Amino acid sequence: MTGNLVRPYCAWGLVPWLVPGSACLLSSAWSTPPLARAWHAPTWLVQLPALVTRDHRALLQRELLGVTRERMMRELCAALELLTATSPLLLVFEDLQWVDPATVDLLAALARRRAPAKLMLLATYRRADVVLMNHPLQTLTPELLVHHLCYEITLEALSEADVAAYLAGASSAARLPEGLAKLIYRHSEGNPLFMAATLDHLTQRGLLVREYGRWDLRVPPEEIALGMPESLRQISKPRSRA
Image 1 (cartoon, rainbow, N blue to C red):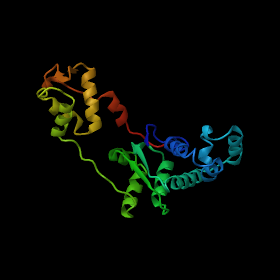
Image 2 (cartoon, one colour):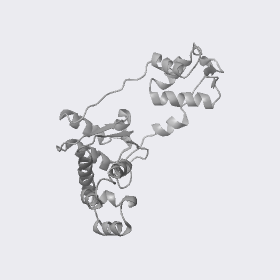
Image 3 (cartoon, rainbow, N blue to C red):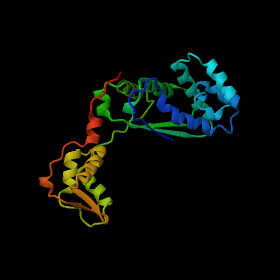
Image 4 (cartoon, helix red, strand yellow):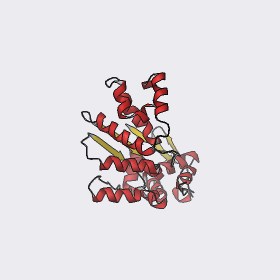
């Protein structure tokens, strides 16, 4: 199951876990009795009206008034351990640099738990943003690495040859337009996200077209002056935590 984190620092925290957490509970809804579900994760179950009756939900809401973030974390950890005791589960999160501090705390809690569980969490983040925003991940990642509680795979930037191979894979022509790969590489510096945004930017400006499965540059590459695409401008704006 995959979650995309697009809003930085949600107001009450743990929102990114609601979708995959809901999916986990739904996956076991037909095999786990309602009372057992409520026992393991009532603070999460109350967020999923499809799994409980109206009366049961009202009862849970009354009992959970003033519930703390720490309790929600404990319950989700326990529920994930229960659900993965016999069946493996892979949770994938992209753009972890946007998560709120509460979610970072939950990641830490999951990593440090000693109970056996067939659970793998795969997450991606942009190191530059983590450093720029002084994000809690900047402290958590080295700590988990030191204690062998996680593995980190650093992805290298694309080379000009990689960019050319990507463009060739989307073209039926034997050769790419002269200078296209070099132009894209120069403006993206090998960043895959920037490469895709640069291609879109060139296309939107009518400087690059793809007709009959082939790339066609309408202007010589040396005459093209590209500014920063608006999509990248929004991403690159510094963000600070509230």
